[in-house]
Image 1 (cartoon, one colour):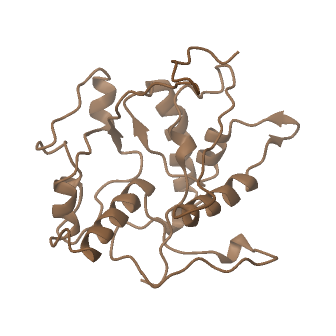
Image 2 (cartoon, one colour; image 1 turned 90 degrees about the horizontal axis):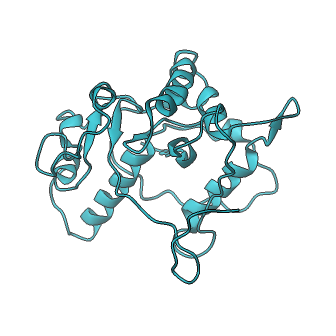
Length: 232
C-alpha cells in the first residue's frame, strides 16, 4: 500500500466522560521532540483542530469526535455501561452515515510502507487532501512493533503469530456488558491475545468498539511521588 494512517483517538477512551456528569478537562501529553516527534506533532496538529465551543456551548470532545466519525471507539474494562453506550451510539450513527474516517476504515492489515517519511513543514495544509486508509490505532501500534521486530530479526513469523505472543486480554462487548466484573483472560487463552481476531489472511474480524480490553490500574503521583487524590 502507498499510504497508511492510524488516526489519533485516545480521548474516546477516557472514563467518566458522559455529558450528564460534571465536565472534566482532559490534557493531552505528546512528544513534540525526539524520536517520537513523528507521532506527537501530527497528534498536536489534530488537537488544535478540535472546536472548544459550538453555538456558544461547551463541547464534550470525546462525544463530539465519536458523533462526527473522527475517532474509532475503543473500550476498556474501567468504563461503565453508560459511558460505553454514550460513545457507541454516536459511533454507530457516524459509521452508518459514512462520516469522518469511517469510509476509510481498513480491515486488512497488510505491510507498513517503510519508505514513507514525514512531510516537510508547509505554510498551508488542506486536511481534505490528506486521505488514506485508516487502521484501528491499537492494531496499528502492534503492527509497528511487529515490523520493527522483523526489521531487527527479532521475530520471523507472521503478524497473527506475533499477536499470539503478546498479552492483550479482551472480551466481546456483549459478554462484558453481561458481566462487567469479569477477570482478564489469561495470555494463552483465546481471549488473552488478538491472534484469534484475525483471519489467516490477516483481516481483522471485528469493528472498532466490538471488543473491551483490560487495562492495568494506574496511580497519578505528583513531582514528589505522592499519590494525587484531588485536583482542587
